[in-house]
Length: 50
Picture 1: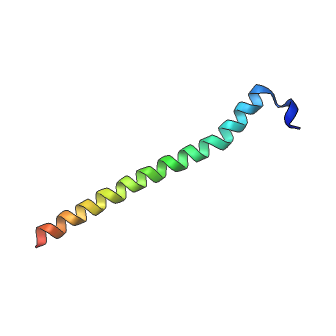
Picture 2: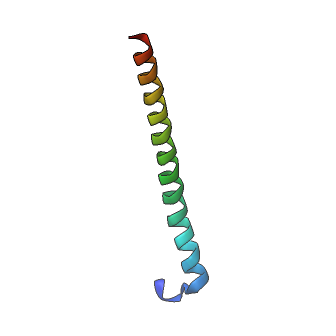
């Protein structure tokens, strides 16, 4: 089965496996940055109230 895939099939497999991993890692980085921004904002509010 694997011996007659060829370069186009290999490219398709890499795309199908790699794209979701890339998108998930990108969105988790964005979420982490958003959480950090929110934490910093809450910290600023806490400092302002003291």
